[in-house]
Length: 188
Image 1 (cartoon, rainbow, N blue to C red):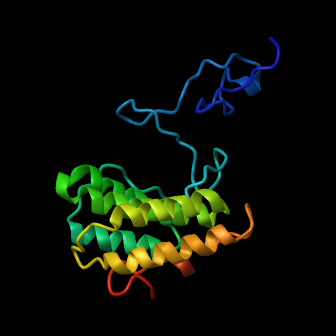
Image 2: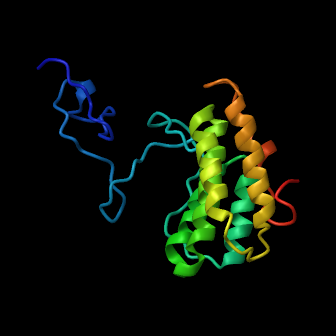
Image 3: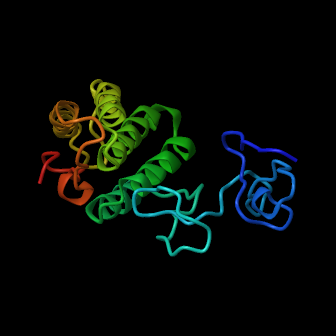
């Protein structure tokens, strides 16, 4: 049968007939209840996949429609808990389910959360890039829902500078300690 190299994005975990069992990689993927590809692997607090069967943190449900105020509260709770990856999913729900004119705000906030996620994982290049991209996305956005947009832009620029100045793959930032305050000054 030879060596099989899994394709990127193809699930090759231990399953009956899977690669590890000597079977053929059929390209089968985990699916959610509606048939969409969605990994069933548990995740850690920074959204990194863990081995099947490992204890992970509860995932954010997708497609939840919240009020803007509930979005800010839930995202802040997750940021404060050191879970920026999960906060990004909350912002993404608001971005996709809200009115088009609000999309730049939620998209920019999602980019900041992903930037913090990458920085916490030790990805200095990606972290700094996404923090800067999020800050640029927010630069022309009016504050709304109690969100201090100018404070968040300053926070993101400052953190991006510190992350970029650190060693590549170097020590990760503590996402709970670095979490921004969404309202009232950007920084705590």
